[in-house]
Figure 1 (cartoon, rainbow, N blue to C red):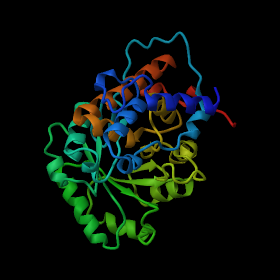
Figure 2: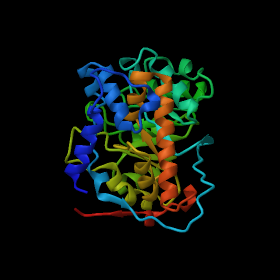
Figure 3: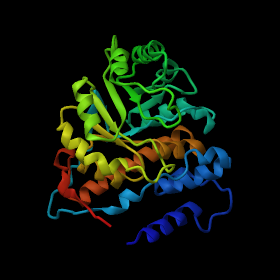
Figure 4: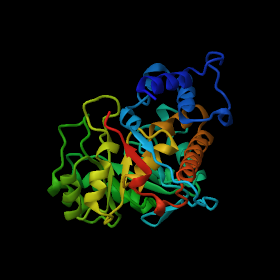
Length: 332
């Protein structure tokens, strides 16, 4: 199947041929995340939708599965644990700032939807609601994401407040292209960690050298992420550099991946290449914008179901049974 064919099929999903213009279909009629994207496009104004539209996925087109037959997969187990939190499946809701741009209840609805799907939500430091208010939503499993700022103490203070509210990990995003004037070196990261008792996860790692430095500085988790979305096609995709980083880490700390994940099969690819879990951000917003918490839950459970189906079709009934032999990377 060529890339143009895949793009054509995706455009069909976006257009939802036969649908009356502007119709918001019931969430239970949608069959994949791209149809949720189409509903979000109908719900939001063009400028707002453009902030969460599309995303670069060319790297996924080069990866195919190599299924194993004659394996008993009747007892699938997708459950996973990160920093003491039990998830139904290794798929997290990634951080997105100012979620009220997309839905009146913003982060509160996102938290309810993620909790209903038994998924961890990473709350943005630039959230629409205070983190302690988000944490009051029932059954939430939360992390908290921050950016480097000139005032390290202020960032640490917000991280400590989030930890006190119940967030089980602090996710520090580095390499943000929109704020090149603020750049923390390892010394700044070490100062930021002083007084923090919550595990620190570094988001934005794209090289083996940075991963190895993170280990030396006591970082407790990594997120392989290029943060570029569709803005820089010259940037390597997260899933392309994931195998080398996972090999370098060697299981000493969890390695997660972020960037372009739209289907449960995408998550299986990342797990096969060494990830402990994946983050989805734009798709979660596609569920939130037209449907609120129910849409987030439906979207996340759809991805979980797709992951389970992909595991069964490839003869991998548990997460421990997934390894690199599941996939083949083609050098097109």
